[in-house]
Length: 524
Image 1 (cartoon, rainbow, N blue to C red):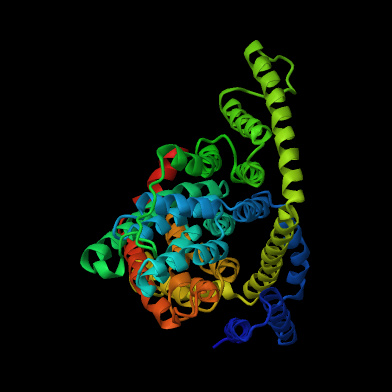
Image 2: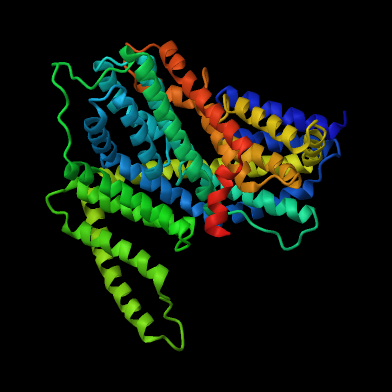
């Protein structure tokens, strides 16, 4: 074994051991990389001049417009969580489906999908739904295993259903890897893959998972009715049905926000970063209405103004730095200015209300903490991958994957298995920032579709989030579950959903068009 190969394997193993021992991720990655870079310099197998490229990598990360979407989507998710949207959604869906056998499980799945499309933050969704739904399901006579599995599975839909933080980070990483692979092949006008491509590609697989979860809930209620009783409360009275207007009042705001964010991306009106800004503003307006519902007018005006601006952007040219502006465009510009004034008024009212109710400070603090964690890990991972490449790690990965029997299929099978196993121990951030840059360029050289690869990876990471005994979603749920729910019951409950995930992964592998059809239709 060559010395550089040994150092690469030792560096990866050391980082894994330190991560498992509880050391902070960013400092583990950066510290391990520096240690082995020093060893490589001493043994004359690493060029110290490569470390000079590290500051430029940091600067490139900090000025990457795509990554601006990360704090904006985090702000959007945390604000919606604090504004009690989840509670209203759960209450409305429970009243709608609660009297059916398995209705509560179906409600949890639907709300999980809506929250995933509204927030994209897995931990927050699992904890929120665990606190709100699990006691209710247990009180109604649901099997603890089924209730726990339903909540954990629905909570992890935020990994796949856009707008997902996972897809934003994965899209940026895959874009760099895809361009690098094409340059290595001598293609000097490379094609690109964007976060918008992944958002479009993840939509159908995400909805497919929601459908499979609901089918499972219905099947369990039919085969084992005692595990999924109808919605009877502790007094024996059936739930009050929610009216159509009441359900519309609950569902309309979050669905409108989802359509505004995803629709603006899919329609080509906004980039994912711009759509993230729309989502952050929409979440602030929604929170302002929830916090002071007796005075909704300023926020409603702002919401209408926001939607109107999105529509105007799609149908008119609003650029004012032109020598000649047609009359129609000039009218649209004037209308846009008026809408901007209405939106500004609503944003200011929303900020004041959020501040007075003590929500804004908590949201800003949580957003800053999470964003800082993501970017510090990203910087540490950048140094790790730089040293890995300096020790000729890319050649090692290329030789390993190309030597696997079965070509691209065999390589994909091995990569998916490795990522699944790593998901037991590593968070999705470490896998995206460290593992994906190593393996993705090699797979792209084998003509693997970048959108399909990204969605396969996202679903795979979601599966590892659920898998016992180390799935992160299980730890989140265990932390908020009542003492009457045993850890073994949580583990047993998620196993059917893990099998559903693996079945969905197999369908994606067999029929890549599930992930690639919509991006091709939307973006050509």
